[in-house]
Image (spheres, rainbow, N blue to C red):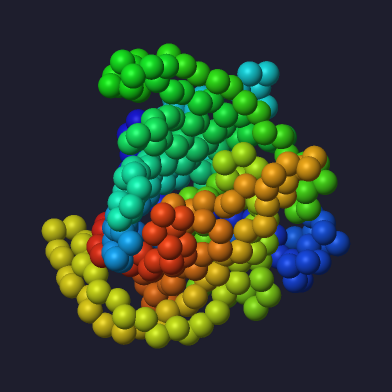
Length: 320
């Protein structure tokens, strides 16, 4: 698939605007549509680091785009059809590599790649892969009525030492949406929240937004609140082409808070929302001038509370 970094189009992100967290059920599918200029997403690579006495975290996030025809080669088929189609010629791809090294317990390396439609930020597909003591790959293909998942694993210790394409244990699952879920005509996946944070300064909502996000097995209503300013020390390298600049200063950051609430069905046990290895609620701090997410704060089960800070950013050349 040929990837390119030119994003000269409007990303129509349908944000469902609710008047308070607990009143969203009464709002239903009534919503205001926000269009976000993708030219404001200036980065194509973000590198983060965090370190505490309880462990270390390294995260790299890559943003690219491809023609819909090329992206279609990577989208898995859904038995019976019904997969969410691409609606425009361009598809976003977000790849996240996370390396978690707790002081106690096992190291964890997670890779996630997501394909997102450039119209409405609708999730098309998400692939998660875990390496370490437990190995697996989980591919999620989004449909109008739920999410189809294909899980691949090595069947034994011999296959565990072989490449992914040689794993033979597979299982298919389908996770339906609750038809009564309020305001969920567009479903995002977790990586899309980085796009939301990157362009939040364009509309700075006074009332919390409510987004529908499918995590691992269940749909979540994610309340997004904007607060600030928050005085924050930043220290990272800016890379644009062959030029590198070190930025070391204090900024008045925008605090974007994410509070997920699981929409579990039929007395299911609610799953805990996960984002970059963080569990539950988390915050993204954004530079109001550049729109860069300079810090992600939350809780990792094996480490505790942690601040994951931006160390390096690469800018898309034709967006600068």
